[in-house]
Length: 259
Length: 93
Image (cartoon, rainbow over all chains, first blue to last red; front, side, top):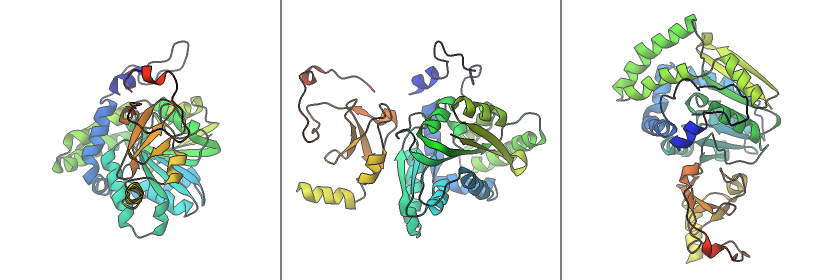
């Protein structure tokens, strides 16, 4: 899997596409990232709450709103992790709709499934979990009415393939809403982001024995794309339009792309 | 005995719903999958690969797929052996 992931970083012969990430090697290969998310699964939800002071819940509600998901829709939450976005989508689409949560981490899906069974709302029965890769989505073309991807795209080894996959499985006219850290350079937001990771995130994670895993966060943001580059990538993948919104003072960003 | 096992698979949450199996396709070939209840897996007949279902969650990361040994795997109803089947060799996914 790691070898094929490296091959996918180079352009295909005869294709004059701009190359993203051709200069820097990814800090972790796909298998290492999968293992990382398996390791942090037991404390992932608690750390999200603690490190964002609960704000991640607001950002995720915004992401779901931007996706345009509505009652009765079939929707996909890609890189669903422990299921935060899937549960929000479930409430939006209701019992006549369907939510599929896809993640490559068995442990994260196990947490998601447990949370589903613990929650009392009947509408959560409309969520199904699938272990899958964002690079090889196990769905037919033009199937979903909306897609969300929260803090997932940055962790995928090949942004272009993931974007093209989302385009393929979306119905024409439907949207993908991609929430993640905002990558920008030389701004106050970047300085605050770096300071928080060095002085808050990593020390707190160290207390859980996960220093190395959360140090990966900083390098993954450095390797990520800016809002402008994300818009460009979405358009190159075939989306009809793409807009990146900065939220929370520029700490976070949300790409909205329409097929 | 088989009927009891099937009921246990569904009630025990080990199997998946028919609705879900109809939504999913093979991650590699993008062709339909069929449930194999005996092996608790999803079969891609297009490329001869089976994907496991673990605790009710289908595992459809390409690396999860296993090439099917045609002598072991029960065939779908109505399927006929092709002349080439016995000569097929194993490969890796």
